[in-house]
Amino acid sequence: MRGGILATMLILSAHGVGGLTAQEPTTSPHGDLARPCVECHQAAAWKPAHVSKDFDHGDFGLPLEGAHAAAPCLSCHQSLDFADVKGTCASCHRDIHQGELGLTCSRCHTAKSFTDQAAMFRMHQETRFALEGPHAAADCRSCHTPASQGALTWLNRPTTCEGCHLPDFRATTNPSHEDAGFATTCTQCHDGLNWAGVQFDHSVTAFPLEGAHLVATCEGCHANGIYRGHDQSCIACHQTDYDQVTEPAHRTAGFPTDCTTCHINGPVQWTGAQFDHDATQFPLTGGHRATVCADCHVNSVFQGTPTLCVTCHQAAFDQTTSPNHQAAGFATDCTQCHTTTQWLGAVFDHNSTAFGLTGAHLAVTCQDCHVNSVFQGTPTLCVTCHQVAFDQTTSPNHQAAGFATDCTQCHTTAAFLGAHYDHDLTPFPLTGAHL
Image (cartoon, rainbow, N blue to C red):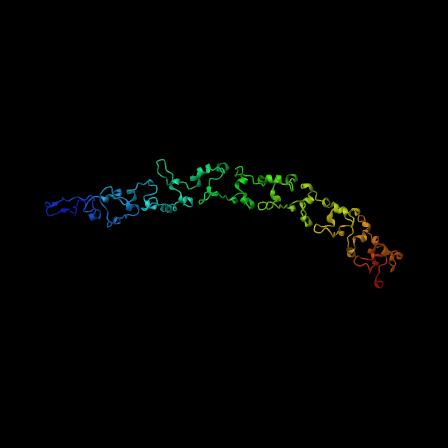
């Protein structure tokens, strides 16, 4: 008890040594501490004090753990009156955070280690900026930079990338982020796990990458360091390819500089260009589809190539003898008889002329009517082809009877035999028994 008498008195007693000597009662410097002195002091020497294993600091509400277990008593008990020491962290540890983070040091610190990174990490995950990747291993001072007074700053720290990495942004030269006009949102290319190995998602732009473009380097297209507003036309990157191609020579041929006109799968496969001829005024059909470009576009002339048949087929027209196209005066529009699907076995649509074919006429060969390959101006009168039949008929005798040479008065193309004469067309129509 404070002001009480020490219960322990040293009594020296020995035979042959003076008389008994007693010390005066001594006031305890520890104030109101009701603990046996032997827990810290020894009879052989009062000082230095040694705390025995029988002394449990936890009885006073503060178990000694970690660094606290090895700390000298006087580091906390600067006054021997132990009752004056408070059990709060701030009673021994100066708050370097100046009250910004509250007085509960155990939120980030432990007695095991004042700089326990694991505890600090767990606490940081409860803030608006959870740590991940390299951020989890970063030194606190790299983000919580010291203020002018030397204390670290904790509140109102920026959580944006540029808040800490703006110097990196400005110092980067390959490519120069500032000159390129890059956004300061680093996460567009970088991630929190690996700062190097930048990957930009080009699909979020107006020019998604596909095929060979996926493996192209950034500098391959952005060689001049221009990223924002970059020309997206094919020729912006492929002008050299366009100029150097000789088969066919693109520049000489006047090809458009939009490579996708022929390089349909350009991003995937540049060679083996395929031009969509169906997009022109001359779509390709039948045999034309298998024709190589050079067969029609001689001397690499593509612009203004005539689309008339005779442009490519003049030789075939001139050399044909069965029938002789030139002698017959056939039109040079091959489509009147030929198709692109099959050149041989031409079929002429006679119904497009003034003499449509019907009945037996459909099976007659061209030469039967067009003797000597005369096609233009061939007469369409029946007697032109049937004069012999007219002259030789005896039942009745057409010549003797003075029949008209217009066979259609009695005959049809469906059946030449079994002619029927319409007597009603005469001045004596047949009726009754006369029929």
